[in-house]
Image 1 (cartoon, rainbow, N blue to C red):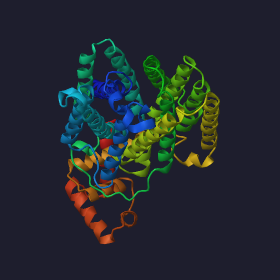
Image 2: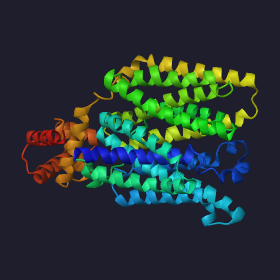
Image 3: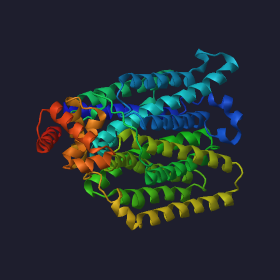
Image 4: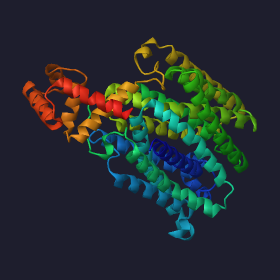
Length: 478
């Protein structure tokens, strides 16, 4: 069962990323794009598919973020999974074969609509995959995401040797493969959260994770800057860039595995001593002509890919430490990085047409200085030692995450209400009735009533028995 679970999540996540790369890193879906390129001026000097879909994706993630304030987990309805996958399939077919629904110049309407709905559909799958991995913890996120990225890269490269029509149809089927694997992984995973059992509806009153938002915006913005600087390059250069990107994805994923598993670095070292300097190195080469600019793009993608997996590994830490839903944290991180990419790419695409070579060199020097300055001050911030930065992904809070999952399993098995589940978590941590009442802002009588209801449903008579029941569930999950 463990092999099945791991294989499903790896294959499904690989299919998800192969679709992303096929759609945005290949020429398979750009044939109709030039027809509407003139509509947006400098903004659409970028590929229109990239611009429209990315903005729609970011907005879609904001919608899921708003939903997460009232309903968690996000992925508790299988129908939502299939709906998002179907939207992605429809959008993919619309951007690859707009003439199916519209003829002649009317296809210029179908193409942007397809680009927008692919963005909204992929926002859902991003949120569902993020929530699932966050529920497993940092260690499992890295151990599954790394092989998935490598496998997805291989699929992308194989598609390059397939005739265009067949490749487009196969790419359109990838969301269905991804969602089937995700559902299979969640149902076969004994450590899954309550997502497929019941829906915990709790209105959140937490503050946004400011540090996560800031670093996500920062990385996304500079990735977008690099993307935009290639907007006016010839097709041959773009195709070579995309191959360099895929090679960097593989190298970045493997490098992250080595630095976390072998050297056991903490989050701050992984981010500020490795990922940021690699991204800064990009701007040394970008002002030069190809192939040096491609070398710079490779460095940037390497650092970005390295950080991107780190970002996914940070979400479980924030969710466990703040005792907040995984989907809420995931949507904050993903929406921030997507908006950063959009604004960064739009800015640089508008600038590239007017900057002289000397000005481009100055711009890149400023980018290097900014990135390294952020790295220096962020890593040197001693207050970060009380946060998640000094935690090691493969050693972080396995007991904490196991504890939370165990509580969710006990609550689901005994049909506890959302409020009773909150009380159960605090009870299992050894807190008394007075503390729980203050923590949840309820009266002593209400807390007492919840205690009685929990004891009755679980079939115990004391707090110590509750703690033993959760500890037993932790042993089962491990």
